[in-house]
Length: 433
Image (tube, rainbow, N blue to C red; front, side, top):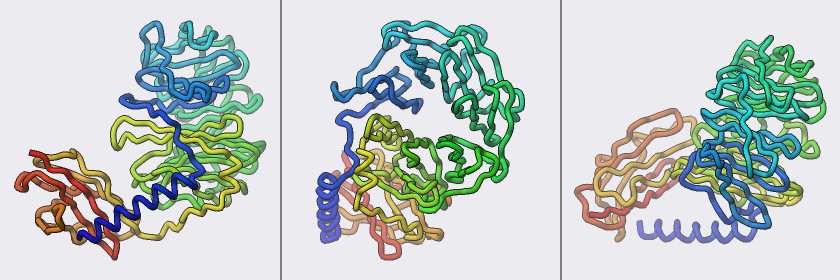
């Protein structure tokens, strides 16, 4: 047991050294903590913005830190953001749409004719025209810079709309009931679902006639004929683990995806240079286990990625990478989706004095979690318990929870050790009286 712990520490040091020296992704110095995010993330005037329940955060490379921009009206919960030139629109939860024309100094309400509890999920703008994608009222449109609003749902079979995107005079909508196009700026909507029928679309990206959509739990679908026909494009993506595509962005016909999986193990950053036929994972420098890759933004020659660490607490970390470095990297990530690995999450609470829990996750098609070898050791390597003391609960297709009542052992450092199919996972636990 002592040898196992020493080997794990040595491997950890090697991985830290490797990632620091050879990482394509560089972490921004400051995180955003102790708040929840609406996941509104993008670029405005060479700055990054990030919407949270605490307010609007702005980041510039010259300052090198996130700055919280409080609304002077004491309205803080940001749901979504839209930009048209120097006009910065924010939908505040339960307060509606507000506009700032002077870089966040003053805010003007823009709520005439709309409910304030819309649950806005996306804002798209072109000139004085603004579209809102909502979970309650479908699509809303303003043609006078937000002074008045009108529902524009003719042809939509679902008012649960999560994304809206403008392309010229055409508008795309991602809904709980598929993909829609309007050819007359929202007056009429036409469902384009050949190959997408009944699927929940979550994200959209377009490159000329090529359209890409994220489909809930089904990865990415692609249309080469402007939405008339769709086909899955998931080679290289963790499709079998339930790929959720939170964000798609395109630059120079290269498509980038932020991917999260149901088992929270195999997501992260992926890109394709051949119309989505093949996807390459590039997560060197990012820890993706039990974290969600949620949003992407491109600023100049760099791509920025948001990692949601709410599994560990209310923490959002931000990474950047030079796009040319990603595309020319010699680092090759293991994309074998049939490795049948299993993983252990950190214990909680830690320190503990009675009941302590830890999540375990696997990508194996068959994993006998109840009969896997499980033991408990103290810091000296003495075995102090076995699987009789470890309760397995909340068993799901790709996850479960290990529970240990540590009330009978003295204060100190302990290790839950899991062994299965030649693999070992160690969960350290501090017991404090």
